[in-house]
Image (cartoon, rainbow, N blue to C red; front, side, top):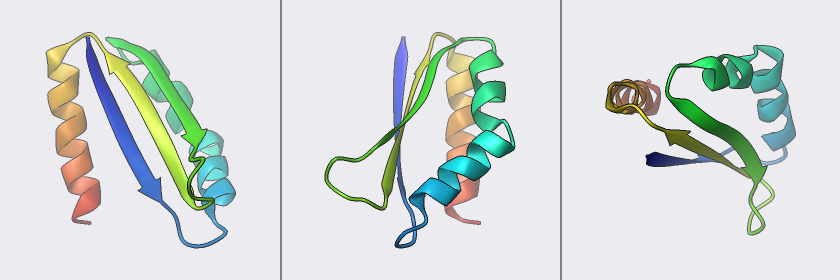
Length: 77
């Protein structure tokens, strides 16, 4: 099993809006439905009001490679 932790640092005061957009577009629901995904969960940081933490658990390597490519794409967008 692979654990992926993603730290989103949002602009000040926009964390809840960002999470709402994720839920509104069903990104969380669609990700949970992906083959090999056993957990996809957002949580608020206890250290920073503008930080959101995503925890994913995967059981398939091909999906991990896909996620890494997606993260790179989103990072340099």
